[in-house]
Amino acid sequence: MSVEGIQSRVWLAQRLSAMVLAVAVTVHLGGMILAVQGGLTAAEIIQRVGGNGVAASFYGIFVLAAAVHAPIGLRTVLLEMTALNPRVADGVAGVFAVAVLVLGLRAVLGFYQLGAV
Amino acid sequence: MEDMLAVSIWRGGEDGEFVSYDVPRLENQTVLDVVTYVQRKLDPGLSYRFACRVGMCGSCAMTVNGRARWTCRTHVSRVADDGRLEIAPLRNLPVVKDLSVDMVDFFDKWAKAGGAFSPTKSRADDFAAIPPGDAKRRQANAGIECIGCAVCYTSCDVVTWKPGYLGPAALNRAWTLVNDTRDGLGRARLRLVAGDDGCLGCHSQQGCQEHCPKSLSPTAAIAGLKRAVVVAVLKGKL
Amino acid sequence: MAGQIKVTHRNHATWWAFALHRLSGVALALFLPVHFLVLGLAIQGEAALDGALIWTEQPLVKLAEAGLIVLLAAHLTGGVRLLALEFLPWRDWQKTLAALAGGVSLAVGLLFLVNAF
Ligand code: SF4
Ligand code: SF4
Ligand code: FES
Image (tube, rainbow over all chains, first blue to last red; front, side, top):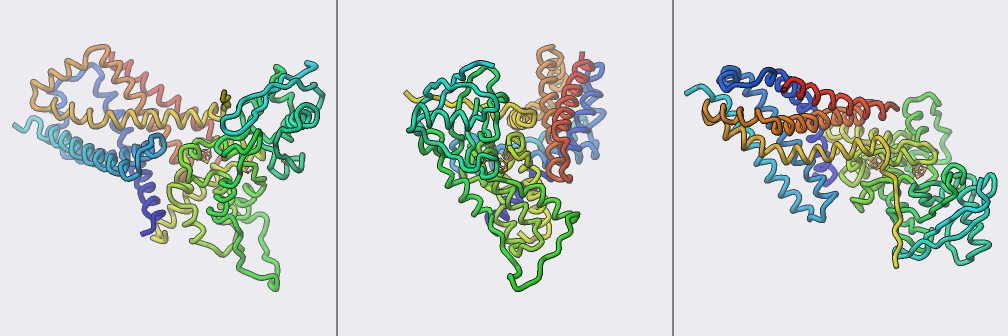
């Protein structure tokens, strides 16, 4: 595939993940604003998300979209505002994507398993 | 109105400096008139460009009090209320000398973006009939009044950050041709302006549209190109 | 002695919208892995979670959280603005959109603060 073809797909991936994130972030923000009302307790959180498959899949998709969206943006910033070699910027973005994905999914799994034991 | 203007003009190349001149203030005086006065009466060595003096050729753009402007159509009264003028060459282009910049990059990028019309018919054919109300025709119309002054190019951060970026004027030109139903370059034209150095590099800062003396909106043209690229990608044609 | 040319091509609404989008984007990207890491540590069990929650009850932490939420809301509304600008037919309401984006993100942050205290 041509260079423009690859770049155009990466760009589109960032926009599509942005659309997913727009919905996910709105839900997340609304949820947080409601949740902090009158303080949070561990028991409350466990009761709400522990073993909750819907919450886990929602946040799974959220993490996935973030792991696509953020590294692409970071790469653009690195290319425009630092003297980094493009290859290095690609590498940094790749490592960052993996880190976000792994840490994010680990947290989602952790919440899902809360209260199970 | 003051009797005199305190004018500082950039002299030299990239590492030049400002030199001060006193220029009589007149009614109905343009910034280009001021520069011309300095060159004719005070310092014949001053280099600058102009041709038409009526806002058609696009050769007289300079940085005036920090903003890129077409100097022949910029009245002193609009930009120097305190009687001070600072006139410098355009940024984002190499300074040749004084107020003249090297426009080679700017025009080379027009060529790179496929700025030339690619006809599908010859002079033997009949006229192409395009109704003025046609949707594509109206898209093209919005961008064809560009005079190639590089004011937009100078006002864009992406051009500063990415030397390869084609820039607002070249992409605006490409969009008028994408909408020209007589043009035969088709997908190949789109490929020239896709990618990070093409329309996808634009961050919609709209410095171009904010400063374009012809009130064009290269940002709108670039957004049009982005949509065309997305359609092509989704169809697997890029 | 070389002179310095001052330029002011940046002082307009849509440039500031860009600057805010970039700043909030980078800040959120850097925050993301840390967020996941802390969450992952906090959910080792009910006791750990309660400990973490008590920590977040401090006013300073609350304020920082509100700041993050404003950044998130700003990046969200600014992003929706960009998506509209890139994917919908062009209109000349760009500045209105930028202002609207700013207003909404500020309102969301305030809502969180009011709720949290
Ligand atoms: S809208 Fe795009 S082309 Fe125009 S100044 Fe901004 S980044 Fe440059
Ligand atoms: S788009 Fe406007 S600012 Fe840019 S070169 Fe054309 S006329 Fe000049
Ligand atoms: S001299 Fe031709 S546009 Fe100013």
